[in-house]
Image 1 (cartoon, rainbow, N blue to C red):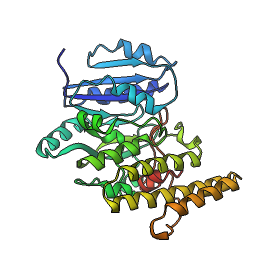
Image 2 (cartoon, one colour):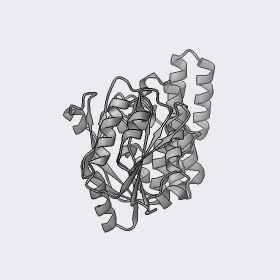
Image 3 (cartoon, rainbow, N blue to C red):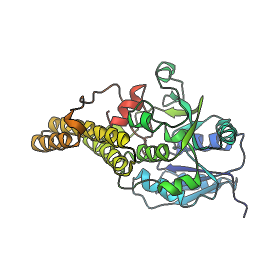
Image 4 (cartoon, helix red, strand yellow):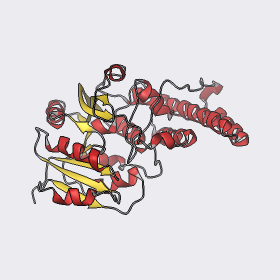
Length: 320
């Protein structure tokens, strides 16, 4: 069987009305050489009937036992990809028709870049544009962006990325131990390994809606996942300056954890987190505590991504 150029991984769970729109946006791509792997996490809302009725052979559903775990669903989809390039989409977000075609063209012109991401804009639950919030999003930047990502100056959205499959294999895919922020950890490792080709065009539509699950997550858990991602990056950093930056960010997340734990009444655990943060800070210079810039979240299996400008900085810090 001929291998497609691009494999698209789309996890879903009980989002049939939104899933239909997401799939339609993939099938409308002007770049036609792709396969769409829909990883269904045990949906009970008619998703299976819908997917089995699609006649386009490029759509390849896989059926999973329900785990409510986005990272596991994405990883399951990755195990089935056959293309040289891999893209990711969530079941409540959309692509514009030129998204894949433009990314492939720009990547072909920049062979040292093994991954790409695009700009995106925000829409509401009904698909209406949110121009004021979208205008506050940071513009994508090309090149070596690891330090920018570590500093939350830019955080590429996973729904906008296109990555060489061999690069994903080199970095080891998604880390199941970082359940909530695995997409951020994934991006950190991409940025550490390769230059990126960024497209300034807004080619992805990210939906804000009340049904997202991230608003129900504990802030402590978001801070914990961020800290795990930064600690991993520190452990593998060969540049001393990068390692110091990672450790400072670890301390920031621990301070955030302490604040969240204190608000929950877990004062002893909060003090332990602060003590841990003090040990992480190089040169005994304490970082400024993180502050909420705006509502933000991470991607979730049945809730997907939201936010505004601080989405990238507050999202990275795990703030809601």
